[in-house]
Image (cartoon, rainbow, N blue to C red):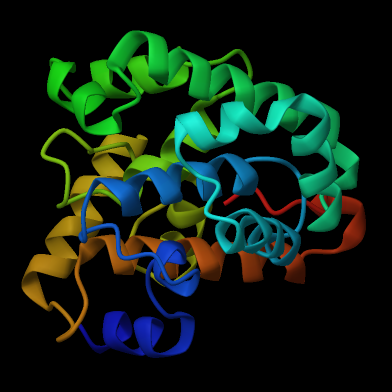
Amino acid sequence: MKILADLLARQQGRFAAELGIDVRAGAAARQQWLLAAILYGARISGELAARTYRVFAARGLYTPAAILAQGWDRLVALLDEGGYARYDFKTATKLLKVMESLQEQYGGSLERLHQEAADADDLERRLRSLAPGLGPTTANIFLRELRGVWAKADPPLSPLAQAAAEELGLLPPGLAPREALATVKQHWEAQPAPGFDFADLEAALVRQGLDRRRRRPASRAGPAAAKL
């Protein structure tokens, strides 16, 4: 289906790749993506979330030990430097709790968290239980880009991606998220785009969904938000 290749040519692939993160490269890259996913998960522009991630990345701050060593005040300052001021206090607290839980429960290893999960649902539950406020949107942002990398990373299609797929004629309206995911996978298996994988397509659909949301009248679009 040429529509998939056209979409990928227009909207690009994984958000992680846009940040210079190859989630297939190893544990360190996936830890970097966890930090980025937490930043993307707030109602803040994608540009500010990416800028803030780069503030942390430039200093090598992404592991549990490195984040915890900063302390709350320093994390707030780093978040503010990236333009994350609206959610700086809340996000600093969340980052400390996520990294503390990851350290205490899994020896600081996301790979161990994945290994100990029984299945996709348990993986999401374990991820979300790392900190209060680490909700389904952040979990979906993180896990969908690991689809095909981690065996148990298999979240449902996000609302943004599903709305975009409906608009593009890939889905009928009203499908359950899991059914929508299976249908989009069928389209992909029938006509994959060279140089991309399904996670790239999913990210492109999310980007299309964000564009769709921006096109809606302000009275219907709700708060300006980036949540991917």
